[in-house]
Image (cartoon, rainbow, N blue to C red; front, side, top):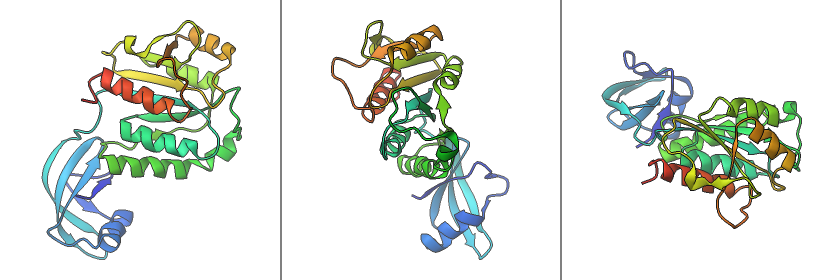
Length: 240
């Protein structure tokens, strides 16, 4: 069943216009009587098309319920910028795994070093990737792709979360399986291809971010966030 995100959707006035109208009426060639789902602010509305005109799609709401695909936790991924199109892959798969927000971070060892203005131009495309992944995986929200952050900016945001961690294979870390599983919000910070400078880890620890590890194998920067998210979702009962 086709699913559409629209946080402006009103159950009292179940009408779709604009891009949704073009997609439903022209791209999908749907007709009156067919069913679709509208997701608004985490609620799934199962609907039947009552009428399609040149101006609007009018719907009959059959049922409404919180999206069952949404995790019970909020997870922000702080991802140091990788090379080439790896960030797009990380965004797609992280959204499928249940991340709430992805924050790109510029760290000392990032090979890709766009300035904030250059990166801002990429955000619309990255957000579309997140939206497509959310639709494909049945999510109840479209995770946000944030503008480029410095490590200091990211640390400020991590400090506001209940459980902020950074993946680091050096000394001073704990197993990810030892992270508490009863929090409402988590932050996971992942390095780029070159990992983190030890001084960055020291700085994050000073801001209350706990170093964690995922075992003895060194994971690629595009593998580490997906592994960490999978472990966290399983650890918190959101992947069983």
